[in-house]
Image (spheres, rainbow, N blue to C red):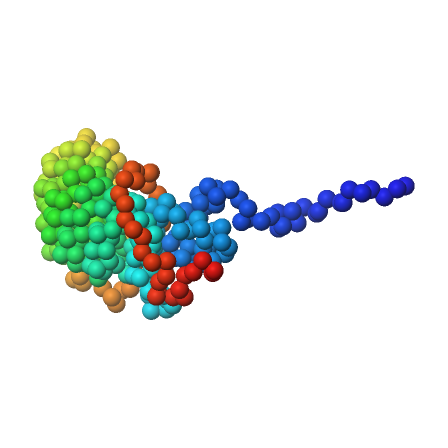
Length: 320
C-alpha cells in the first residue's frame, strides 16, 4: 500500500502546547491581561513579547489599577509607590479605579488626585501612611468619586467629613476597623460625620465600628437612600425594638452585629482589650479580595503619560 502524503495528526495535547499565544487577537489579549494585577503586568507580562509590550502600553489597560500584594514590603525587590506612579502615568488620565494595599501615602494620594481627576473608585487597605489631611486634600481633586473603601487605616471623622463635602456623587462607603469588645469604647463621631455629609449613600459598610444606637439613628435619618448596611462587629449597636424595626423597613440588605463574617475576605479577629484600632504588633490584616473593574466612562480628559522608564527596577524599553 502506498504511504500517505498526509502527516499524522499530533497526539492530543501537543497541538495546544504548540499554540502561539502572541497570535491571539489584540482585543482578546487585552481582555485577558486586564484580569491581572498591575505588579504582574509591569514586572513580567509586558516583557513576554513585543505584541504584549505594545498592549501593556495602551492607556485602556490602566483604567483600573490593582496593586494587590502580600504586604511583606521589606521582602520586595521593588518600590510599590514608584510602580503605582508609573501605572498611573500610563493611564494618561483615564484612570477610574485603583486599589492600594499597605504602601499608600499622602504623597501617592496627591499624585492620584493630580493625574486622575476622573477617578470613580478608590480602595485603601492598611495604608497607615495616609493621614486625614492627605485624604482630605486628595478628595478636593476627585469630584467624581463614587466608591471609597478604607480598611484598617488611621483615618478619623475629619477625613470622612471632607470626603463627604468634596464628593457629592459618593454612593458607596466602606470604613472598616478591627472589631473590639473592650468596655467603655463608644464613639459616634464617625457615624455623625457620615450622616451629616453623605446624604446620597446607597451602600455602607462599617465593620467593627464603635458607634452606638445614636450614631445608627443619625445615619438612617441622614442617608435616606441607603439600601445596604453592614454592621458586623459593631457591638455597641442593639437592633432590638423600634430601631431594629426601623432598619428592617428602610434597609433592603442588612448585616447585623453578630452575623457571620465568613464572607468578609479579610481578618475578622475580635480584640477584647483597650488597644487602638491599628497595631503594628498585630501585623496587617490579610486576605483582601481583588477589586472589581468599573464600566467605561468618557475619555475626554487628556494627560501626557510619564516616561516609559522607571527607577523602581530594571528600566523598561521596547527591546525588553
